Image 1 (spheres, rainbow, N blue to C red):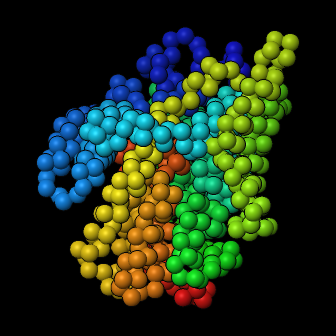
Image 2 (image 1 turned 135 degrees about the vertical axis):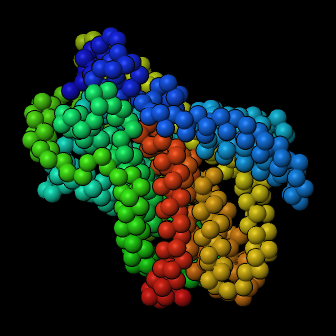
Length: 549
């Protein structure tokens, strides 16, 4: 257990990332507890080749971002003035996010300043989305994760997963098993909440693997545990696995409910809970297999075999000893949060998603409110009452990744503006007219591609709310049944794997500091393409098999 006074790596002389004196032995625990997601080149362990690439990438962004914005502003693209300016700024911000000449949250700040100064919207209108429930979900979840890491609870959960029969002997099995757990949970709990609750365990597992590699001499003494390929694979499986699992049930992800409601309203075809599951199950299974293959091929773990992990886990569990008061309090706060996150899904299973009971429960147990309530318990449950010491201090909470909170807030700003200015609708209908779509297959392909593109720069929920209403009239105008194209767009809205701002779960794992932006883009693009192909091919088949078309 790590205590306030005895936290690992608090000896004097340790530098960023838990390394001592620049060339000493890496303190793995401190590296994960005090990680910095947005690190300068001097704060990272890079090879000469990597450093050259990073310098070129970041320098290019300094020039390219303003150039792209200015050139697009000067082009006669035929958009309304407000939409034209928003598109120009958004293109520049995407360049900043991809090339990182400044920390990614700062790129978002620059974009918000630009849209206000160019008169796209007022400052008050631009900043409203920072009060989004999702932003508070991040804050609460990160505080809970900080407590679980500080007091060792995340390590206990990690030991449990690694101790499962047949899992702890292979990094591939660890990644796949953790992804399967994520998928199953996210079918009934929101994707954001699933990733938030499992993140500390994932970090705990990665810390164990990092220590094992360190003890076996398979990494340098002063290695950076935040840059292990197995860490990127595990974190991306956590984020992407939640998106895949969220497709399995209507309540697994907000886009499912939005898309289902719009489809039922347009076609009169009701999609029952069971019909949805039967239709989505093969799609999710195929996507999970594809996900595991893509992630493990593009992020090959440093080692495949984890020989000796059973003995290592046994020794670590013994060192942890019995549950401390702080651990028990953290577990109580975590259990309360998870229970309240799950409860709306349970009510939906019993009463249906259209019942007044479900609407009341889901409305009052908003995941953002639940997250900050659970986090607040950490400051109320005492560890030493006579000294008025509680489970967490505010100095601990202040160490959470506020940069990622800011980053996702700016992502929500641009997502809401894409919808409110009509830019997303203009782009969608304009592309449809240009392509002359006339068949189910072409409209379905267009629907999937548009939904994925929109979801890359805005939330999945906004993507479904914007794209599905565009696709339905396009299909009807072509005298095509809109059911399959709209359903495909609904599924594709849960994609968007390239950027931290694409989904809350992407942002959460990016906030762990273990996934470089280039790694997320490379892996995300690959799965975007593969997932789009699977949706286009499998959704029509399963919709027909279930009897919905």
